[in-house]
Length: 427
Image 1 (cartoon, one colour):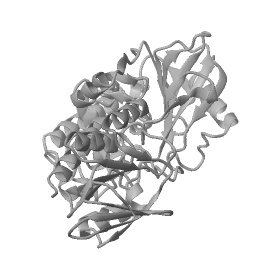
Image 2: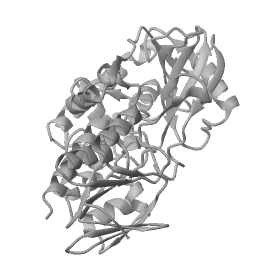
Image 3: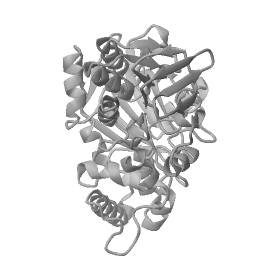
């Protein structure tokens, strides 16, 4: 039995924020992390093993992520502005186009669909769950929402590309509200999502988590997957395969899918149990492609399959370009296969020469069990922050169910600090 004041399970941004706030409140903290590194869904690593350090997890932050910005400055990190989009291309019917996403004959129907999405997005942002036609904006899958739009195929493919960086899950399963919420960042326009991906934290999010944890003075235990969490009126016991940890309280700084691996005694409240059992549907892939012949600032969206979103994000010292690309982990997509990646790149950048690619599989990573949060249609309420209030001596922290900025690292930080407040109230 190893005792401390407060245990934090998870060394991502939520766990780091919780540990820092708890330690500043005068309590001893022990962090238990399943993987061999800190950072959670932030993952900075050298491209290809010996290339420049790139973010293989979440990266972009928005202008209003004030708490994250303050923590980065406090811990000696800087902000790198995202490169401007200087060239925009659309893949349609096997051909790249520069004039726009749809053929001239489809422009009126395309513009009607754009307007409908914009209106629905703004309504949802203001808390209205149906539009003026009485159509539901929640409880409906992204695929059903696209069917309802009855838009041209090229319009549908354009929305699908932006879906890979917003809803990021099976279109027939994940809620359309994930897409609409992201559109609402720029007056309801899907194309405007990128306008608010303003900067990245440099060197990286995982470095920020490491420095926050170091500043907290917490005892850090890596490669220790937690199996059970048992609480009593006097304290909490957290068990791993090799030992039992005891404390006055525990912060579970874990995402929804990660909680599925734990056994709780006594059981959690019914709303939490249901949400955990369902999980979330985040299943995008993010990969980096190093290539020659692609101008930095080029943004290409695809035709509804394979790599659907590709942005030439930065240049290499040797004149090459690093392209960040997204798609869905589904049948027919093989981001680990070099030949497949080259074939996909040839569709989006036909005049380029692909040199290599690198990625991290978040879906099959046992310490992640998925990408960023994607609520299942009809079960969005399970991720409401109200359902994730502390239970007894256990508090919960994750961007998955943060009270603000859910799905972003800002939400992870706010959620971690909220959990720390609950722990500091324990006697």
